[in-house]
Each structure stands twice: as structure tokens, then as C-alpha cells.
Amino acid sequence: MRGMKTLVLIALLALPAAVLAGDVKISDPKGDDFGPGEYVYPTDAVYVAGSFDVTKFELKDKGDKAEIAVTVGSKLEDPWRMGNGFSVQMAFVFIDNAEGGFTTCPPGLNLAFAEDSAWDVCVVLSPQPMSRVRQEADAKAGAMASSIIAPTRVKGKRSTISGTVDMADLGEGDPATWKYQVVMQSNEGFPDGQDLLTRKVNEFEGQHRFGGGTDFDCDPHAIDILGDHAQLKAYECNEDGTTKTLAVVGLEKP
Image (tube, rainbow, N blue to C red; front, side, top):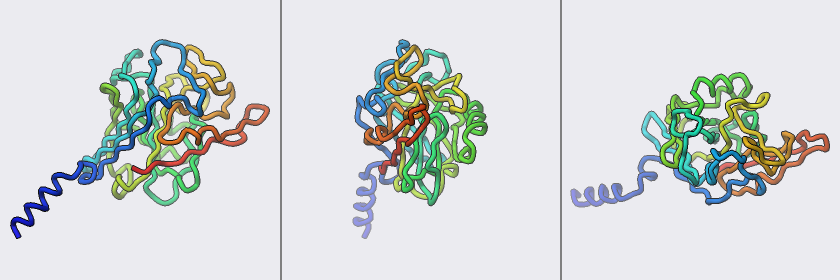
């Protein structure tokens, strides 16, 4: 019996950490940081190639805390001296772990979620102070504001942006059974109108504007997502530039 227990213990120790701790890791292809297919980076030198190319998402279960991390395809830099190790990126991490949820997105992303992929929690990884993100969410996100989480501190190291949140704020259950989506945007300290700290996508790129979209607000303002980018192509604009149909995205399983 003692020998059997020893074998079981050895087998458990040999399992990957994700299996033991409920950790999550989702990889994403490199080189797909082009939105629906034609988006290009702003022209300013701070927007380094690969800066918005999501290559990996991770959730590390630390008991009563969870570390949320997004890795991009370039070394992180802090040209605007935000003090967190990165400046230009901002990631929205959507989590589906309960019945119901939202099919609309925080303002500025110009996206929707499918009915069967409604999200329950959105963690915002921004170089802006938590107080600024919270203030923007409360002022602009309406009914979904209380479901938007801003970690106390977000940091960038090498190519990974991460923040730690209370597990209780994410919801109940095993994170390995939840579904996720990451929408990569750019940190905009002076957002337009009701946009939640997001940077515009225009028809032509500018010093601090993405190009390849439209000059209206009917195109998805997402530079990269987890999974198939064909989801981002299915949007339509009315002749006056208003939204006819939003791009609808789904969630990914670990």
C-alpha cells in the first residue's frame, strides 16, 4: 500500500502545473496583429513592430489571487514613462464563467460577443493608474462598469504584461473550465468622447492613429484577438458611417 501511495504521489508531481493548479495558457499565432486584415501601426517610432501582437494569454491560480498575463511579440518599452515597464499597449481580458453576461463591449472597441459567448468579467491591463481606469469605466461603461476589473498594479517585464486580482472578483469555479478572449488595444491617455482609453483606427495611419480601417466608428478597434481574425471582418457600416453591424467575436477554451 505504501508503495502504491508513493507511485500516485510521483504521478501527481509529474503532471503539468496547469493540471494541478487550474492554471490557464492559450497561445496565439505570431504576426496576426492586423485587425480584420489590413490594419497597420501608427507611424510614430514608439509603436514597435509586434507591440500589439498577442502571442500568449495566461491565468495563474495563486489561491485567493490570480495573475493575469498577456505576452506580445516584441520587447516591452516605456517611452511615455508610465512607470510600469510599458506604455503603448492596453489589453482587455474577457472571461465567461457564469450564466448570462454581456454581449456588448466597453466603449471604444466597437465589438460585440455572440449570445452563447457572453462575458461576465473584463480585466483591463493598462499602464494607466488603477484610479484612472476605474474612473473611466464608472463614467463610460454603464451597466457593465461593475464587471470591469482594474488590477491595483499592472507591470510589464520583457514581453509580458501582467496584473494580479482577487480570485473572488473573477467568479467561482475552476479557471481551467472558463472561456476567454483577449482584445489588444493601445493605451490612449486622451480618448475621444466616450471611448474607454482606447486609440482610434482610421482609414490612413497617422503619428498616433492606426490605419487600414475607416474614419468612422463602425470598424472594430481591435488590433489582435485570440483565435480566428475572420470574426473581425464581419462588420458593416451605413452610408453615413454609423454602425450597421458590429463585428462579433467568440471566446476561447484553454
